[in-house]
Length: 320
Ligand SMILES: [Zn+2]
Image 1 (tube, helix red, strand yellow):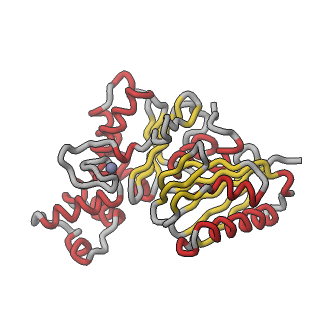
Image 2 (cartoon, protein in one colour; image 1 turned 120 degrees about the vertical axis):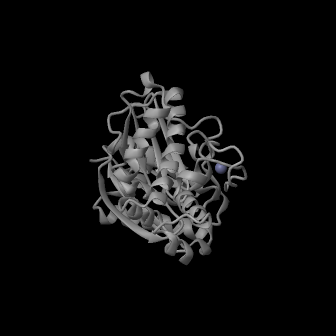
Image 3 (cartoon, helix red, strand yellow; image 1 turned 180 degrees about the vertical axis):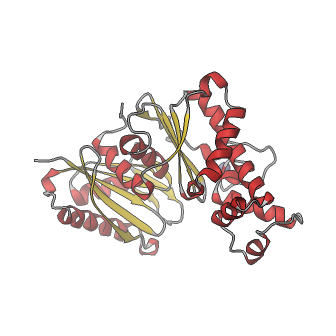
């Protein structure tokens, strides 16, 4: 008789469902469209049906399913099990924990997507075996999850780890949070593209000009141009790396992690990002605290959310 756990990773376009054993090994997964327009009630019912199908496909008896975790992008009340507001999904004030528990009859825990991914990486990924680690996800925004002393840190309002909204540039550009100059405005995919566009608009000569003018530019274009030696592309990456490294230097003296694990689409830039990031970190961080800190890529990719969500119920927040 085994113990199995369900992890759900909700995104704007798809919902990923996975089932793990008690060690976090992913046994089976599938994906369904989010269909934000169908409304929360229908969406949650479809999710519950998907969960039962998932257990069946994995050959797991329902009685062996001991819990379900769910990660979603946006603002959630972890303690109350409620979704306040999500990014790209118009669900508001949804008591999703209660709904799923009623539909499935198993304990449910929810948390935001970056916290859940941090749990996944520290359970089965790049941070395995660490008690102190910070996950930073570089995507459309910048997300973070902090593991300290073997625990996921949530804080009194669940906002711990929202490092994308650490202000780094006085008088900087507006951020989605309503303030200015947050890390997210510089070091996210959106930030990279904005910096490249600003350089083109300032008349700088760069191979990125055509993709900026066509409006098709992505971080991948910037990485490719940087690898060809394009100065503007190199400067964009340096600026993004420098801002991120300053924030990492701050976090280093707050909770002295063993590693910063960097995930999200932008981390696909590989050494083109990691080399300037490590150099900038060495410049900014307190040497005695930073000496042994690793800056490493996330390992679980798109599975981090599912595995970490399963970990929410399998392990709680204690992973030491
Ligand atoms: Zn912000």
